Image (cartoon, rainbow over all chains, first blue to last red; front, top):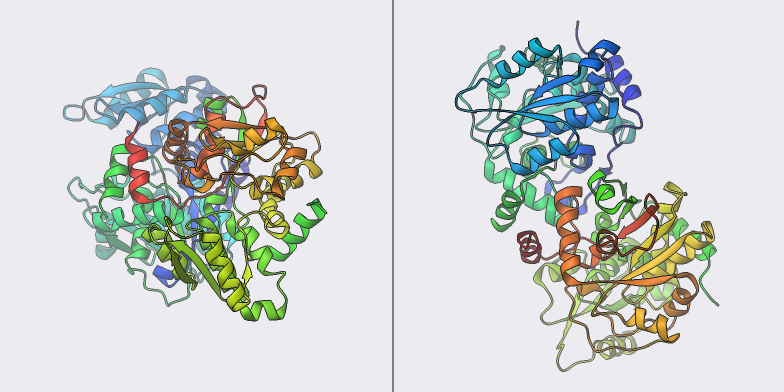
Length: 320
Length: 320
């Protein structure tokens, strides 16, 4: 049982009218610097600020009446939290989100703003997955995993489906890799629609669990990474996502934190869109000249999110 | 002889495939704060970073062969410079841009980057219009005025044409006002397509020449304004633009520099787009609750440009 284009198409059908069809931007400065025809799929402009709504809402739209009645639960201090919270509101169910006690205030407020109940855990003492599972057992709520779930993966893939519909001639597609939900869905859709397309993942060089795992041919764990790209601080690829990545992804490119910062700055000052560090890693790889494609190639780049902490954004902009 | 929808449509036909059809964004945080259904027409994502390419390119595409041979000249330290420079490159002619000796380095570089020749003038000693006219007389180049020209106005109006095609149910349209080229074109298109639409201009409160002129029923000059919105530091409405504004614009709303800063910040951190201060004045008016429309109204807001100085952006983001 694996992910197919049909799953992604079914997700797109479910999501229609509820997720934004995000714009695909072109930028002359970006093309000049990279030597490619870059097409930016702007999930930083998605509802709730990141692609996460796609997967979460697709998942919630497949719940049965009893499950909707009981609601959902998720653990995340980042974009998945907001995606699940908004998805729950959209389908008319309730969400409990487990967040660390030291979660950024803005993300906490945004999650509550979408109507979710937030339950805190201590990052030092508690295992967030256990906290969430305890809630599942006590309340019968459905756990919405951040990536390792076919409905989640299919939902995330709708971003690539839209991009390929708009730019069918893509030579390559470049996607951030955390747990692998986004790239698994996107690669599945892209390679089915255009078998010759080359799909590349991008990780921070200190969060290279998927790059290592591809090299070794099996899932490899790493110590908790410290990259500025907080959305992809993952220690091991997903059990369901990794086989999809193995099949469809040509390679994972690595970028440094400084390259990520430079990309956030470039995107803000030259393209005029705000990304969070994680949201800019794919652009960072292309800007750093790491993409092994010929000059003039048409390259789709997913900007995965824009929920950046104001102080972090200021610091990045100052860093020139 | 006045501006008509047919002029704007003809401009759109000429510009097709050369200017971006910029995205129209929706933002839940913005709708929540304003109580309106806001539709952002993102000219900050336009080629060369502002709506200015539309008018400049429309003008240049109407030049005859001899004029194209001789080239064009313009005076501007801002977005008009870049718009004319890129337009000249696109039509295969040459541009001379008169800029002050103290023009921001980034804008100077961008203008040169598009292939224009830059001629400097001393802001204290020289009259930039005279500098440009001397070049016209010496070289036979065609002067491309920043706003007071029917071809320029028609080109700028294509932004509203696109917006109304995408969101035909707009109740109101809110547009920054400098010399009046953008609002004259946009109001002409919008009111022809949807006679019931209410069109509002927005000026910085210290750059209120059009607001004053509308009150007095004639063009009124003011001393050089000092607003942070450097693109609309205009001292008197255009002779051609003002009658169009009088006919089609219900009123001009005024915003303070602090309200403009707050709008730039909101757009960056909550909507994830970068605007320059001038580019955010229409959003500032809506965010400040200055728009006299009922709750739930569908409101088009033009974000006119994104070419903000990095230090200025940092300072604005820090100002929270």
